[in-house]
Image 1 (cartoon, helix red, strand yellow):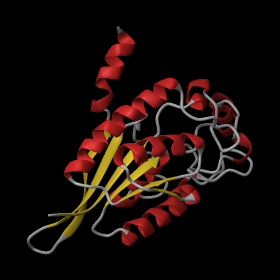
Image 2: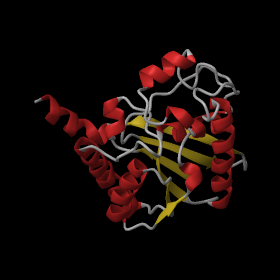
Image 3: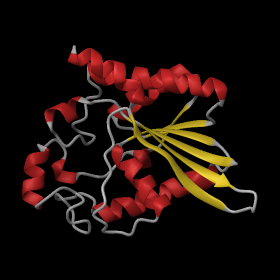
Image 4: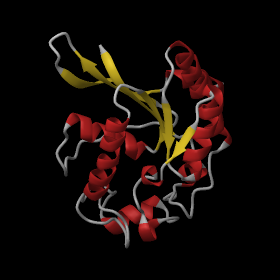
Amino acid sequence: MITTELVFVRHGEAQCNIDGLVGGPRTCTGLTNIGYDQVERVALRLAAEHRAKPFDALHTGPRIRLRQTAEIISQALRLPLHTDDRLDGPVHGAADGLPWTDVKAAADGGPHAHPDKPWAAGSDTWNGYLERAGRLLQELIEQHEGDRILFAAHGETVIVAHTLLLGIPPGSSAGFTVSHASVTRWQHHLNRLGQRRWMLDRHNDTEHLAALTQEAAS
Protein backbone atom coordinates (compact mmCIF):
# COMPACT_ATOMS: atom_id res chain seq x y z
CA MET A 1 0.00 0.00 0.00
CA ILE A 2 1.24 3.49 -0.88
CA THR A 3 0.99 6.00 1.94
CA THR A 4 2.87 9.27 1.34
CA GLU A 5 3.68 10.30 -2.24
CA LEU A 6 6.04 13.06 -3.35
CA VAL A 7 5.84 14.37 -6.93
CA PHE A 8 8.49 16.83 -8.12
CA VAL A 9 8.12 18.92 -11.28
CA ARG A 10 11.19 20.83 -12.36
CA HIS A 11 10.39 24.36 -13.57
CA GLY A 12 10.11 24.96 -17.31
CA GLU A 13 12.91 26.35 -19.43
CA ALA A 14 13.97 29.78 -18.12
CA GLN A 15 15.76 32.64 -19.86
CA CYS A 16 18.78 32.31 -17.56
CA ASN A 17 19.07 28.66 -18.67
CA ILE A 18 19.15 29.69 -22.33
CA ASP A 19 21.67 32.45 -21.61
CA GLY A 20 23.92 30.10 -19.63
CA LEU A 21 23.81 32.34 -16.56
CA VAL A 22 23.73 31.44 -12.88
CA GLY A 23 20.07 32.22 -12.26
CA GLY A 24 20.00 33.44 -8.69
CA PRO A 25 17.40 35.84 -7.28
CA ARG A 26 19.01 38.89 -8.95
CA THR A 27 19.19 37.28 -12.38
CA CYS A 28 16.15 35.07 -12.87
CA THR A 29 13.63 36.76 -15.18
CA GLY A 30 11.30 33.79 -15.50
CA LEU A 31 10.28 31.28 -18.13
CA THR A 32 10.77 31.44 -21.87
CA ASN A 33 7.86 30.87 -24.25
CA ILE A 34 9.02 27.27 -24.59
CA GLY A 35 9.12 27.04 -20.81
CA TYR A 36 5.50 28.15 -20.58
CA ASP A 37 4.50 25.53 -23.18
CA GLN A 38 6.36 22.83 -21.25
CA VAL A 39 4.64 23.71 -17.99
CA GLU A 40 1.20 23.89 -19.57
CA ARG A 41 1.68 20.35 -20.85
CA VAL A 42 2.82 18.96 -17.53
CA ALA A 43 -0.06 20.80 -15.85
CA LEU A 44 -2.56 19.03 -18.12
CA ARG A 45 -1.02 15.71 -17.19
CA LEU A 46 -1.13 16.48 -13.49
CA ALA A 47 -4.71 17.78 -13.71
CA ALA A 48 -5.88 14.44 -15.12
CA GLU A 49 -4.04 12.67 -12.31
CA HIS A 50 -5.51 15.07 -9.74
CA ARG A 51 -9.05 14.29 -10.86
CA ALA A 52 -8.47 10.57 -10.34
CA LYS A 53 -6.50 10.86 -7.09
CA PRO A 54 -6.24 14.40 -5.71
CA PHE A 55 -3.04 15.97 -4.51
CA ASP A 56 -3.18 17.40 -1.00
CA ALA A 57 -0.68 20.27 -1.29
CA LEU A 58 1.47 22.20 -3.76
CA HIS A 59 4.78 23.70 -2.61
CA THR A 60 7.28 25.93 -4.38
CA GLY A 61 10.10 28.41 -3.72
CA PRO A 62 10.10 32.18 -4.34
CA ARG A 63 12.29 32.46 -7.45
CA ILE A 64 10.40 33.76 -10.49
CA ARG A 65 10.76 30.66 -12.66
CA LEU A 66 9.45 28.51 -9.81
CA ARG A 67 6.50 30.76 -9.06
CA GLN A 68 5.48 30.96 -12.72
CA THR A 69 5.65 27.18 -12.99
CA ALA A 70 3.70 26.66 -9.77
CA GLU A 71 1.03 29.23 -10.64
CA ILE A 72 0.20 27.43 -13.90
CA ILE A 73 -0.05 24.12 -12.06
CA SER A 74 -2.07 25.68 -9.24
CA GLN A 75 -4.60 27.11 -11.68
CA ALA A 76 -4.89 23.88 -13.66
CA LEU A 77 -5.45 21.78 -10.54
CA ARG A 78 -7.32 24.47 -8.54
CA LEU A 79 -4.92 23.66 -5.75
CA PRO A 80 -3.71 26.34 -3.30
CA LEU A 81 -0.05 27.26 -3.62
CA HIS A 82 2.32 27.35 -0.66
CA THR A 83 5.56 29.33 -1.18
CA ASP A 84 8.49 28.60 1.12
CA ASP A 85 11.70 30.62 0.91
CA ARG A 86 13.64 27.53 1.97
CA LEU A 87 12.77 25.85 -1.35
CA ASP A 88 14.68 28.51 -3.29
CA GLY A 89 17.64 26.28 -4.19
CA PRO A 90 21.34 26.84 -3.49
CA VAL A 91 22.73 30.24 -2.51
CA HIS A 92 25.03 31.35 -5.37
CA GLY A 93 26.54 34.42 -3.72
CA ALA A 94 28.78 36.44 -6.06
CA ALA A 95 28.16 33.94 -8.90
CA ASP A 96 24.56 35.16 -9.35
CA GLY A 97 24.28 36.50 -12.91
CA LEU A 98 27.69 35.31 -14.11
CA PRO A 99 28.12 32.82 -16.96
CA TRP A 100 28.28 29.27 -15.63
CA THR A 101 31.36 28.64 -17.80
CA ASP A 102 33.25 31.38 -15.96
CA VAL A 103 32.09 30.23 -12.53
CA LYS A 104 33.08 26.62 -13.19
CA ALA A 105 36.46 27.65 -14.61
CA ALA A 106 37.24 29.75 -11.53
CA ALA A 107 36.07 27.03 -9.11
CA ASP A 108 37.69 24.14 -11.02
CA GLY A 109 34.29 22.60 -11.68
CA GLY A 110 30.65 22.99 -10.78
CA PRO A 111 29.14 22.86 -7.28
CA HIS A 112 29.42 19.06 -7.14
CA ALA A 113 33.12 18.95 -8.05
CA HIS A 114 34.39 20.10 -4.66
CA PRO A 115 31.35 19.50 -2.45
CA ASP A 116 32.78 21.00 0.74
CA LYS A 117 34.05 24.22 -0.87
CA PRO A 118 31.97 27.26 -1.97
CA TRP A 119 31.88 27.71 -5.77
CA ALA A 120 31.89 31.52 -5.38
CA ALA A 121 32.25 34.12 -2.66
CA GLY A 122 29.22 33.91 -0.40
CA SER A 123 27.84 30.74 -2.01
CA ASP A 124 26.78 27.52 -0.36
CA THR A 125 28.91 24.43 -0.41
CA TRP A 126 27.18 21.59 -2.23
CA ASN A 127 27.16 19.34 0.84
CA GLY A 128 25.99 22.23 2.99
CA TYR A 129 23.09 22.85 0.65
CA LEU A 130 22.13 19.15 0.56
CA GLU A 131 22.14 19.02 4.35
CA ARG A 132 20.07 22.18 4.78
CA ALA A 133 17.54 21.35 2.05
CA GLY A 134 17.36 17.73 3.21
CA ARG A 135 16.28 18.88 6.68
CA LEU A 136 13.49 20.94 5.14
CA LEU A 137 12.32 18.08 2.94
CA GLN A 138 12.28 15.70 5.89
CA GLU A 139 10.24 18.25 7.83
CA LEU A 140 7.71 18.52 4.98
CA ILE A 141 7.50 14.72 4.68
CA GLU A 142 6.70 14.43 8.38
CA GLN A 143 4.21 17.30 8.16
CA HIS A 144 2.39 15.66 5.24
CA GLU A 145 2.53 12.01 6.27
CA GLY A 146 -0.09 10.08 4.31
CA ASP A 147 -0.59 12.87 1.75
CA ARG A 148 0.16 13.31 -1.94
CA ILE A 149 2.48 16.31 -2.16
CA LEU A 150 3.39 18.20 -5.32
CA PHE A 151 6.50 20.37 -5.68
CA ALA A 152 7.30 22.90 -8.41
CA ALA A 153 11.02 22.80 -7.86
CA HIS A 154 14.58 23.37 -8.93
CA GLY A 155 16.47 20.40 -10.32
CA GLU A 156 18.63 20.60 -7.20
CA THR A 157 15.56 19.88 -5.05
CA VAL A 158 15.03 16.62 -6.93
CA ILE A 159 18.66 15.72 -6.21
CA VAL A 160 18.07 16.53 -2.53
CA ALA A 161 15.16 14.07 -2.47
CA HIS A 162 17.27 11.34 -4.05
CA THR A 163 20.16 12.02 -1.68
CA LEU A 164 17.87 11.89 1.35
CA LEU A 165 15.68 8.93 0.41
CA LEU A 166 18.41 6.79 -1.18
CA GLY A 167 20.80 7.53 1.68
CA ILE A 168 23.55 8.74 -0.66
CA PRO A 169 26.61 9.69 1.43
CA PRO A 170 27.91 13.30 1.39
CA GLY A 171 30.55 13.96 -1.22
CA SER A 172 29.32 11.27 -3.60
CA SER A 173 30.08 11.91 -7.25
CA ALA A 174 26.76 10.34 -8.34
CA GLY A 175 24.64 12.63 -10.50
CA PHE A 176 21.11 12.82 -11.90
CA THR A 177 19.76 14.43 -15.05
CA VAL A 178 16.70 16.56 -14.30
CA SER A 179 15.10 18.01 -17.43
CA HIS A 180 12.85 21.06 -17.60
CA ALA A 181 9.22 20.26 -16.73
CA SER A 182 10.10 16.64 -15.94
CA VAL A 183 8.21 14.57 -13.36
CA THR A 184 9.90 12.61 -10.59
CA ARG A 185 7.85 10.54 -8.17
CA TRP A 186 8.69 8.97 -4.80
CA GLN A 187 6.24 6.67 -3.00
CA HIS A 188 6.31 5.49 0.61
CA HIS A 189 5.15 1.87 0.68
CA LEU A 190 3.69 -0.08 3.61
CA ASN A 191 3.64 -3.85 3.05
CA ARG A 192 1.49 -6.53 4.72
CA LEU A 193 4.22 -7.14 7.31
CA GLY A 194 4.05 -3.54 8.46
CA GLN A 195 7.39 -2.70 6.85
CA ARG A 196 7.87 0.71 5.26
CA ARG A 197 10.27 1.89 2.57
CA TRP A 198 10.60 4.65 0.01
CA MET A 199 10.55 3.59 -3.65
CA LEU A 200 11.44 5.72 -6.67
CA ASP A 201 8.51 5.22 -9.03
CA ARG A 202 9.92 7.39 -11.83
CA HIS A 203 12.72 9.86 -12.46
CA ASN A 204 12.95 12.61 -15.10
CA ASP A 205 9.78 11.53 -16.89
CA THR A 206 9.18 13.81 -19.90
CA GLU A 207 6.62 11.73 -21.79
CA HIS A 208 4.16 14.64 -21.74
CA LEU A 209 6.68 16.76 -23.70
CA ALA A 210 7.05 14.32 -26.61
CA ALA A 211 4.60 16.17 -28.88
CA LEU A 212 6.29 19.50 -28.11
CA THR A 213 9.67 18.04 -29.05
CA GLN A 214 8.24 16.70 -32.31
CA GLU A 215 6.71 20.09 -33.12
CA ALA A 216 10.06 21.82 -32.55
CA ALA A 217 11.82 19.33 -34.84
CA SER A 218 9.31 19.65 -37.69
